[in-house]
Length: 256
Image (cartoon, rainbow, N blue to C red; front, top):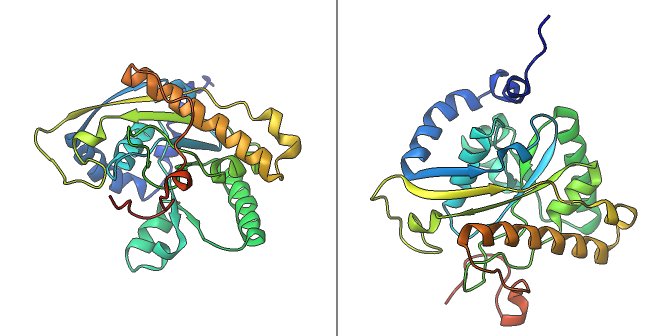
């Protein structure tokens, strides 16, 4: 029997029976009308098995570009989504049917348990998940990645799952941060760079310690900023923007 090629193995997640098929058949062409993607480093996204993908976040529209990039790279894009959304009629069914991952705001103990359960499920099913480590649109005035939260690192360390950084840029031309949608002209260029998995080995022995999780997250955010700097062709800030130091809320809409 002939060996299965890496590209064919990579496509198995698409070809398995899934509601992704009809949804992707409609959604992918529509998203492609908005964004003309240029993708570098697609080979860094694992072709099979679990992974955590950590992109930057600067526009309400960039999840569409991230999802399309992941789909073009051969994997089904699944995001972390607020648990409350899973209780919304129709939307909840879509989220469950496509394997989106619920996340709840809860106590530290419950959060740790949920992280472990989610990680085990990803490994068992061989799925990836997209986690925005910033948790919301960046507050950085220059739209560089700001200080990250530890959720992506927790998930990756709990299941020994590859954590892959991603940077993307250009969606602000369609939807500026907290701005108005601009549909014309179509096919605005968006550049996407997927980096090599972050080496978290130095943090595995101390993964339960808050300081270690923060330090590991800083490494991830530095990698994302470095990738974005190659797209923007300008140096990233030496330090990540910290909303707390500027009197800003770290969640919700940023009021000017």
